[in-house]
Length: 249
Image 1 (cartoon, rainbow, N blue to C red):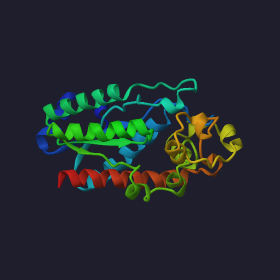
Image 2 (tube, rainbow, N blue to C red; image 1 turned 30 degrees about the horizontal axis):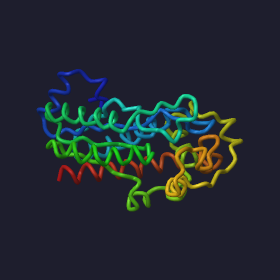
Image 3 (cartoon, rainbow, N blue to C red; image 1 turned 90 degrees about the horizontal axis):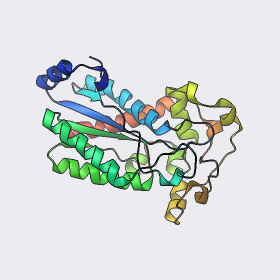
Image 4 (cartoon, rainbow, N blue to C red; image 1 turned 60 degrees about the vertical axis):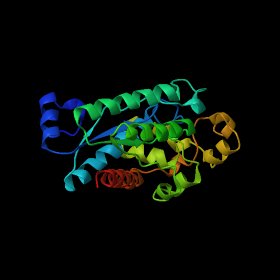
């Protein structure tokens, strides 16, 4: 069966739910500036890719899963100064996630998995709250939080450095999934920007510009490759699968 929930029919979903435990994976991203070379929906592409890589591993483990339509809006104030960025309040984003959780629980889904690649501090804080509140509703929630040290260490050196917005890490992922959306001329001429977002956030920066990213990117886009992207998707998916298995155990 097609794992994309939106491409299934309601009788197919009904049959799957009747057959046994079913996981719903919710890709979470944002619509925000990602340098001059990556599309505004970069985070959505990455989160959907994480989910898509996870599904075969779940199937191999005997776990049925559907990928929900992605949530493409989130708190994104750091990028608000760049055209095309759409930021919403944390309260609005959390309310939508919790309503989705209620709907999934009412239908009989066993677990909601949050596949997130938008690491704006306000968004991560909101997701932690949403995961806890959804679990309090009686729905199992799997949320691999890649901002936590243990999971961050499974990813690339650039990601761990904090200089990873539209840099080598994210650019590689988009090159692996949607290469036609990468502006290669801009990528090849993008100068290295080693400024760490996490350090800038800790010092009080409130915008990408204040953090040292006047073009809305941090890191090393020229060093990106599709091969690195594939390897990173595998690591992201492994963490998502592990979190789901832990919830269903």
